[in-house]
Image 1 (cartoon, rainbow, N blue to C red):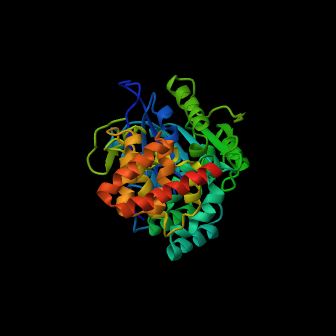
Image 2 (image 1 turned 60 degrees about the horizontal axis):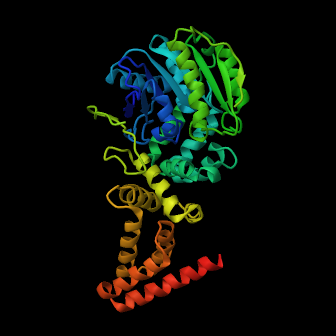
Image 3 (image 1 turned 30 degrees about the horizontal axis):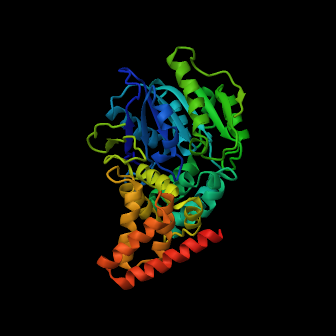
Length: 426
């Protein structure tokens, strides 16, 4: 056994408070720091936030040796010590929640509060994790995408928010297979059930209404053992921080704010509630700045560039087109789809130097020159969305006849004519 190396992102407090306390956010197995991105703005308003990746996930290096939850807890403490040390608040989802319980059991003096989300003191049965680890070693994380799509999200979430859901599933493909399997090995032997009653850190337990991986009844039982508050997030599955970020942020901040104000000591009374730019730190640590759809920061993470690109891609091409493209993603094409969203739409189309009308003019001209008629049809529709008229599109294609050649322009005009006719028919 060995303490794995983890990497993290640190976000400054938005309010600028000089003595803001630290809130550490832990991910679920198979996800990265981006799991917490939708809730980050609210959580970092009054607190410094540290998000970390599990071994072989996101920015953390791959693991080659087995590790335990106790060693993962030690690795989290090392991150905290690297950014200033001291006591901190903690919130984690699923496996990240289990690491929070381990911290509370082993290092209670370091924790100000712990929020355990869709998690428990024991995860399933050991044989199930042995099987999952073997499957991952044999077939890779790509073999887990289908079952993860079913178990992670509440019914309808992928249709309601395909950008975040697809990104999470795409990130699963990039996780190191052996590191994922070693996480499964650690989950198989993790068991804090005999220590829960002794945990005295102020606590909160959050369940998801439709969570089948850690059913809400079990999370509520854990809250009772901890003497903690219990919050049930309606219309959420196993990843409520992604699915219902506002509700999760409000629940976590409810506990953290109370502890900071001095209103909570030890366990919390039980109950059910329905539902920036920083400095690069040395070594393994780096801050993650905020991004904007108007132009991604050069320090933005890949996940944030992807998100910004998906927003623009949907605005320009339309939900129907993007949903159809996402529905066709396979393990073999996932990297290409991620590449297109990140680099074409996230890096180029988000740049503020040209407006979208101008970018559509340039795109049409480039596609005519390259003879890419299929893409041209798609971008004729996009150009209309971006404010070009049919007459302006025709004028742009006529202009290409001089510089790209009459045959290319003739084919392009035919493609545009067919696209206009299809739109009229619709």
